[in-house]
Length: 335
Ligand code: TRP
Image (tube, rainbow, N blue to C red; front, side, top):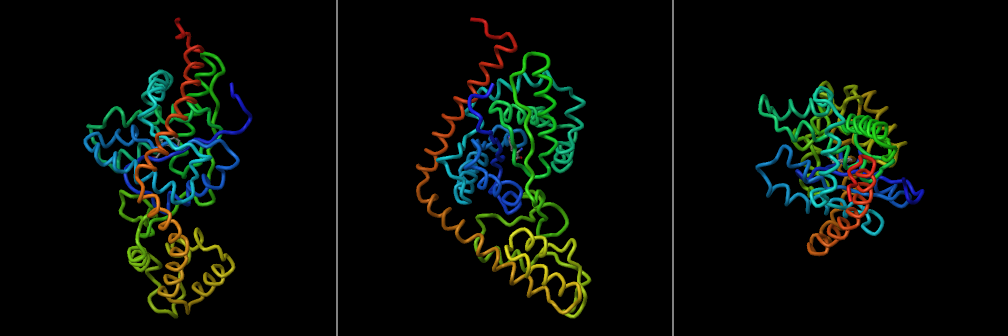
């Protein structure tokens, strides 16, 4: 049972690359806003990252640090949020083992996110068993901290659903011990990529990273997908499915002007270059303080690693407490 009545958040990311604007709109922003009112745990899921990167330990190691820098630079405050490394909490692996008995193979094969990712990665007949079962390990991450709320992007919803099923089953078979979590969806749970076709994603090469330089951001915005039928400035244009407007909706705080621009664009007479210039300015205003903070933290890698070490120690205490309750409920508390 919970010790205090402050609600708990657990969320995190796989350290397979730097974080991008999609991560920010879908989850990082909410974490920063909620961290003062919730007890917040943020997991850098290196164990999960290894499920499809077993042969690239260097890449994962490097990105644990990069993701930590991303967190700190967007304003996740290590004084109130506990940032930790998944692999250093063996209790999570233990809980995963117990949870694996509460889920069927066919249920795992039906998880829509895993199905999409399987296709993307083209595993064919060679899918690592750890990959198919990573939703179970993710359920353990969430349950071990008794999280009430999980702020995530849209593609993670099936994971929360599966966690709820497992937790319910555990509580029913053994003893009410674990907490059923809820997903927390941002207003923009799925940001389009600069290609305007699919969601922003590292593997699709359509992302703008939080760590991109001004030059790179400008180039990416200038190459952004708009409306292929909007050829001359005078042509009426489509706002729906137009990546530039999707980004203005997500990052331009002057909603009134954005609505005006949409009207003008639909009618004709507003060029792509004009809206792209506005977007570049909006993104510069947003990213430049983030870049500055990132550079500050990057100067002192030892201090960043210390934050992770302290966070991991704290997180381990919480997970250890839950696992004691879990073992008792499962009659594994022998001595
Ligand atoms: N699956 C998440 C991602 O791909 C990372 C993750 C691991 C996570 N464990 C979690 C997210 C628990 C939320 C809660 O980035």
